[in-house]
Image 1 (tube, one colour):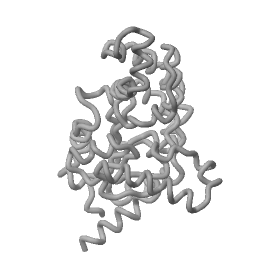
Image 2 (cartoon, one colour):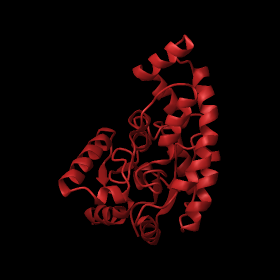
Image 3 (tube, helix red, strand yellow):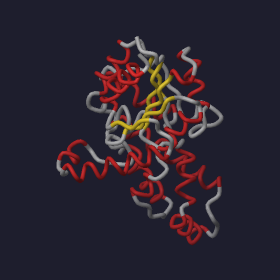
Image 4 (tube, helix red, strand yellow):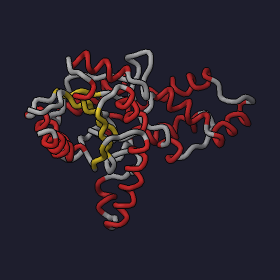
Length: 262
């Protein structure tokens, strides 16, 4: 048995959707509906945050805010964010399931962690309506975590700790130091840090790298290492205690940490 009682995983870019692609095109498309040009790079920057906050962050970017003011005569307001969000959510609902394939090695990692006695929790920046489309696709591949906390389940989302506190209640797992939070984004790592949990970033499957396994396979070892270092810095700067390539590497890390206490 492990000294850890639970591992809490993010979804897109961590357990499913290698490269975190599902929301990207939708962000660009939804802004286009308002006559605003955005890029995939701009859309990736706030990833991991609740989607309303994500849109707010994008609208605060100087290039986007300037376009909005030029078109509508005012800087983007929270009411404007509401209008974009209202269209974004159903658009994201319709595509999220198409990107819900498990990260390679993810199912085996979860089985391994359960065999060590860990409960499996999950939090996400997605709304519950979006996750209702993702859950059955993940379940068909054998991934059914013990709980799910969505961005709209609580009064405050990432990077605050409330989602992790709710996981502790749902999973009956505590103290925070006995829980591992696994995520590919800054807000997700900060969520774990704020709750006092051990935090593990995943670099190669996540938003900071933003490539499919097939795209990565076309790169040289030096190019891959450069991407890994870039993602690792982002995750470490957010407070990650450890950074691994993907969730497939987590059981080995847990065993290493357990052994360090022997």
